[in-house]
Every structure is written in structure tokens, then in C-alpha cells.
Image: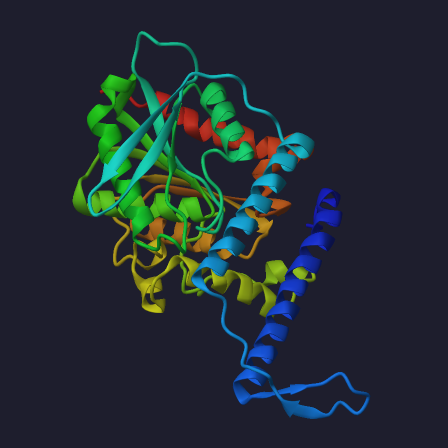
Length: 366
């Protein structure tokens, strides 16, 4: 199906951004090579080659840190504009914040969004993980906060948002350990927070969906908290890149080499070693077995190279006897759920997510 016209200008901007990134990287690499060789080219008409004054120094740790902070500020500003222009604000809801200790890793902040005032009965809850390529995002990002508010109210469930640590300051498996600690904490304290410990699910978007899927594996193998459902939106399921579908990016006019560079940079940022990509907690699709995992609802987008990950993970779950449904939304891209204020497909996506979240009401109270 052709790409929805809504994305036309966004696509042009994104292509320019990716190409500019690639060109800048090539220029930087060439400059480094010239410096290492001790030569440079002067500005004379003849282009005389002369010895370099001094080799260029690689960026310091503080310089890289400042660059990341600048990038994250820009991402937050972009997210704020997206909510204002093409998103849907979230309603006022009751929230509660907690800090959960994590053995051997930094503590993690958790925010519970309630669907209404204090209820007489315990309610279902979803532990949810934001997207952002493991290196940007957070539960305070405007579109993430608005989505959790709307989903809590529309589905009548508690959304328990986990503000996991970002890479590269904190690399794998920090995020998985924080997710597991949050799940154990939620299950142990559920009644205290008005939540039914027998009606829990996990959800995530993109990188957050990878964490959510990995959490179901860690939980199966370690603690066996009763998880009823997993909802995975545009999931990253295999960081080796084996299941990337680059036909999606080629259809958008983005050269495969540029798309691969961007996608591989995500893995390099998140993982301490390339071999970590084969760890099933980094790449849930590579688990030796998917038996005994909770039922899954997986949503993918036609113009997203990660559509292959989502389809392959659904197939792996089904092969292992796990009930899994996979739906692909035609004519749309990876970040479609953000655009509920402007795109009919995004509003349909929201309704389908709410229907999946509300299924926890069908589980008898524990």
C-alpha cells in the first residue's frame, strides 16, 4: 500500500537527516585518517599537501557526554512539538511515583497511572516500557506520558511506567535487571497500590518492546510471576539484525547502507560487546525456547524495517505453542502511535491497543 500522504514531508526531512549524518561521519573518518597519517591539504590553489600541525584528538568523554545531552534535549523538544501539533494530550489522572531498588544496578523510577479515583476493587495493571532506541526517551516525555494517561483511562487499567536507564551510560543488561526488579516489586506490593497481582501484563514500544519481551523470558526462568499478556508494539526482537526487512526502508527511498548504519548504531550503543546480541535477554527471538511465555499481541507497521522482527517473533511464539497474534498496519511508519491527533491509522492503533489492554479485565480476580 502507498505510504500515507501524512508522512510525505516528514519522510523528506528524515531522509535529509540520515544522509547528512552519513556524510558527516564519512568526513570525520577521512579527517581522522589524514591526521593519523600526519598530512593535510592546504587552501592554496595547487592543493599542496603539507604535514599536519598536530593529529586531531578523538572526542573526550565530557565532549561525548555533552553531545548526548544536546541530542536528548533536541529529542525532548521534538517530542513536545509532536504532542502539540499531531498528538493528543492526556487527561488528568491520579498518579503515584516510587523508586525501586535493583540489586547490583541503579534503582529505577516507576510511575503508576490510575484510570480514576481510588477504587473499591483491585484493578489490572500493565508494566510498560517506552521506546527510544535504548538511548533517548523516558516516562516524562510528553507523548509517552500522554499515551499512558489515555490508555489507563480508556482501558480502565493501571499503567505502571518504568523509567529504565539509558545507554550508553548504562548498557545491557541494566535495563533488563531494572525491568525484572520492577515486576517483582509490583507483584509483591500490588494490593498495597490497589492492583490485582493476578491480572498483570507487560507492554512496550520499539526498544521498550524488546525489554518487555526479554522480561517475560527472565520471569519465566527466574521468578514465575503470573503474567497474563504481553503487548509488543513495533518490537526490536533480534539485535543481530538477522530479521531486519530493508525492503521497507528502500520503499521510502532510504538507501540500505544508511538504514543499516543507523540500526546497527542502536545495538552498538546498547550492548557492551557485539556478542551480547546473541543473548536472549538482548534478542528475545534468539531464546532457546519460547514455551511457557504469556500470550502475545504484536503490532507492526508496513514501512518499518522492524516489521520482520515482529513477524518472526510472533512465528517463534506460535511454534512454541504460545498464542500470538500479529497485525501489520498498512501505509504507515514506525512512530505511527504518536500521531493520534492527525492520522486515522494512529487512532485505530490506539483503539486496538486499548482493546488489548482491557483484556486483563476478562481474567478472574485473584
